[in-house]
Length: 69
Image 1 (cartoon, rainbow, N blue to C red):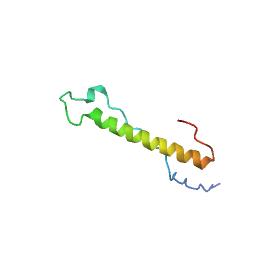
Image 2: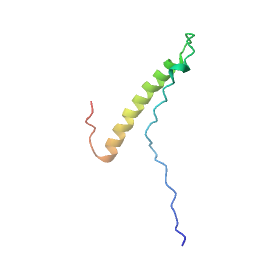
Image 3: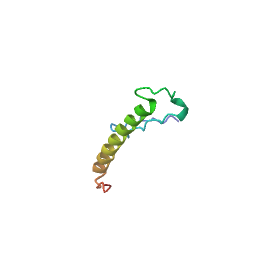
């Protein structure tokens, strides 16, 4: 028997994805500007801002209140 499957609809507001922290060995140690860890830090900061905004939107969608500081 054939069962019709409805394709899933992608989430219009997916949770942000955290950047992957580079391995310590990924740094060449030559004092690059910016260092791979500087880039990671900036990406991590951006991710945390985006995550907080996403969490607030999710709380509003669910009708709950975001009680985190």
